[in-house]
Each structure stands twice: as C-alpha cells, then as structure tokens.
Image (cartoon, rainbow, N blue to C red; front, side):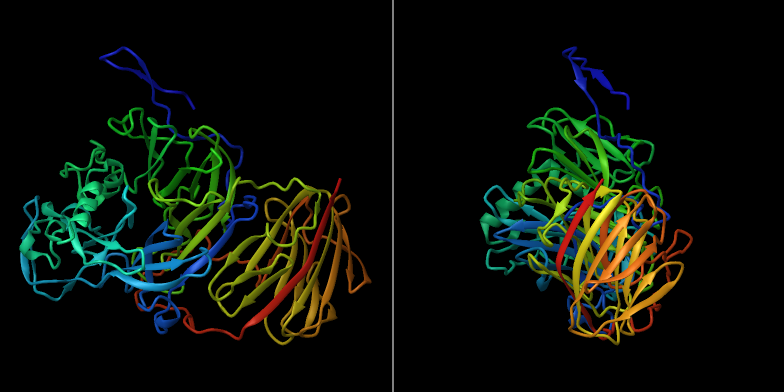
Length: 609
C-alpha cells in the first residue's frame, strides 16, 4: 500500500497519514464457514445466550429472538456483557437491553434488564427535516446502539443505550428517528441506579416533556452528573454515537462523508500517546496525530476486505495489535470471523480463524444476517485482562457469543511433541453443546442441541507424519455421535473416525465403514499413525492393530486434531437467503435433545518429518 503524507500549511511539517492495511498472504475461501483458514491456537468461543421463544427461562428470561449489538467490559473483577434484544426483527417491536455477568468469561449468569421496554406516550413530534409524526400511545420503541459501557477516570461504570422508532422496518433509528440516549450507573454490588436521558434526540423533535425518563442533570447524585459530563466531554467515546446523533450534534467531531457516505460503528486504538487510528464498517479508516484533536479524511483501505459486519481493532498487552473482522464483501453471509495481527498498528498480516461455525438460523426476522458479526472488544479506558483478547459478537443475529484469544495470538505449534493435555485446545462451545476442560488431562464434550454441536481441536506441529494417541469414554452407546479427525491447515480431512449413535466405531474411507463396537462408560484407546506420502494411516484400537487404511482426502501435511459431536455442515451456503418471515422457526428449535457426553483423556501427539 502506498504511504500517504500531507504538508501542514502552518508549519510545513510533513505529517504521517498512514492507515491500516492488510499485507498477509492468506485470503479466506468463503464457500466454507471456516474460510479454510488455520485457527488461532487455544482460542475459545463460548455462547452466552441461545435465543428461545417458548422457554425464555433457559435463555436470558426475555424470549426475544433478535439479539445484537453486544458490548463487553471487564470491571470490578467480573466480565460484563451488554446487548439489546427485540422480539423478532431489528427495527420492530418492543426492544430492551440486557446485562449479563461472568467471573471467568465462560459461564454467564445474572441476566438483568438494563433498559426496559419503552412505550412511547401519545404525542406529536416534528423532526429537523420538517416531518411530523403522531404517536397514539400504542407504539413501542426498539433499542439500537453501538456502545454499552463507559468507565470514568474515577472507576464509575456507566451503562448506555439508545431508544428509537422506525416508520418502516428497513429504516434505522438514526438522526430524525431516534428518541434519545439513556444512561444509568452500574454499582459495584451489581445493582443499578435510576435511568436518565443523557442525550435526547432533539433533532428528531423530542422535548423534555415527551420523554419517559428525566435528564441526567436532574439527578440528585451529583457525582453521577459529573460522570455523565465526563463522558460527554470524551470525544472518542461519543464518536461512537455518530449514526444516532447525526452530523448536527456538535459532540460528533468526525462527520459523515460529504458524498453521502456514512461512517458507521466507530472503534479506535492508540498506537502511541498521540497517534490514534479510527476504524469503521466498510473498510473506512482515519488517523489522528494529535491525540484526537484533528483527523485525516476518512478513506477506504481497500486491502481490508469487509462489508457491514463491524470491525474491532486494539493494542494488545504484549505490545502488538489485533484486528477482528469478517474478511468478506458479502453483507448477508457474514463469515468467517478472523483476526489479523500487526507489530506497528498499520501493517496487518497472518490472518487466522476465530469463529468458523455457522449453525442454522432457527428463527425468521427482518434484517437478520448469517454468521458471526458485530464484534466488539473491551474499549480503551476499561480494564482489560492482560493474558488474552476478549471479543463479544452475535451469530445469525439471534445468539450472543464471546471469544477469548490467548496472547500471543498465533496459529502455530512449535513443539513436535504434545504432552500437555488440553489447555491449548481451540474450543467451540454452544450453551447446549458445551466443551469443558474438566482438568488438564480431561476434556468433556456434551451435546443436547439438535441444531449445533460441540467442537474442540488442537493445532499440531505441521508435518507429513503424525502419531496421535487418545482415549475416549463414551457415556452412551445408543444415541449421539463423536467425530475424531486429522486435518490439514485448511481443514481438509485426512482421517475420520466416528463413534456412531448405534454403538459402532466407524472409519471413513469411500464410505462410513463399521470397525468395532463400543460400550457406554468403557474406555476406547485409539492410536493413529498417519503418513501423508502414501496418504494412509495405521489404526490401533485398545492395543489391537486394525490394519492400514487410505486417507479420506489426499493432503500433504497434517496440522490439526479435531473432535466434534456432529457431522461438518455446509449449510447455510452463500446461495441461501435468511428467512424474513417473523413466524418462522425450525422444528423443536426451543427443545433440548437427549444428552450425549464424551470424555477424552490422555491426548498425546508426535509430529515427524
């Protein structure tokens, strides 16, 4: 990418205007949910909510099947996740926002409504465009926001939301369709203070007498008022309000483009004390060299392939930089979610997979898109754990997830011998198909979800020959399944063994062939000696030689060991469009299946030349 500079008219000093770009060799193949990208070693993806229309008590207690706008914080020794939910679709229905808490980022609890359903009172408003809108008292606002947390210098945590309405489902609540931004304080004991408006949408025609909550300036808690004013004076934080507040709001320093282009979903990071990078959807970037006082024009960085799924970038505790996004030009099919890393915050390389699973969309709704999307990490100004990057996001706009990327972010295993158990396994853990590292030498995969599966994999030292040993304890022999695979770096499957639901251990050759039986609660010891030069492997089961067999797919090197409680999926494909019917739901989507559980112990691997 060509470096750009400009000359200051006042000083004649040449200024650096470089913005982020991607210079790595990898590009995803989006015909696959995982993009054929190698995974981050040790990454873990945990489902926080699984939307449930008929059993809300199994989810967050609300029952909304549209969930989005997840934001993440670490404060007072706990993780907090803030997201909004609407009954079915993005811009219709009675919306509210939810707060969940977790001590470890894996198990989430204490789901609370932060900003409740907002019923617009009977009134007439006239927006700055001259449009007059009359409400009868029967209209409910929905919630849509880019940020959910702000931590003050005095360590007070504010929770933020934005109420809006829409005359049509395809219209957003920005600018003249907003009602306003609300705020309340999260206290250290987990309780919350009263709700106030911190920034009503005056340009939408809303006056004080039409709002259901008072202005923050009316609060009796003067320290809370000072916290709100600190936020209002923080130009980087309030830049996240740009779409809802509009260019007419003087708080917004970086305006939308003069050509009508919009700068959506702002995030930022400091390269050093003065240099700040701003990023938006659709590959848009800008730079400040004076601590955010002035900015270069917002431009498109074409090497950053992305669409409307958001982007998140930050400086990491090891002194590097990480950028998380979906490297695809499609906006309806949003996969895979990847991370690229940088040493200087400008040149990004080494694209790796974070979340490469796209389960079926269980519920219909307007403006729901497939895949992992709308990712946000922990914003600057809020404490961050120093051992990992944490990301919040949604999948299919109906489930909320978090991902933990251990530092340093890498996709490589440097040791030819692995004897360290399961601590570095990459984990995909839905709520109804959880993956649990019970101990350093015991990994448990459970599954009672008819539409998803548990998955765990280990990055191996990439080699032509692999010697893999592990033991499986199945807790049933009449239902469920466990797939055990050796794959190359791109996810092509060389070896597949299947603990089938009928109590048979099978191998995949040109078809799935039964090999021997297995019994519930009885150990099965497996050894695989794979050799890529001949595309074959020798299999031992409980010490018995089961013969030499051909690979399922011809691969040149093996780089991954994968466990999964279901067959790999190809749907949804890029030709499949999300269902907009609000009444649609997959059969039994809200009901649990009979649980299947598999323990895996004594994993060892040796990679040879």
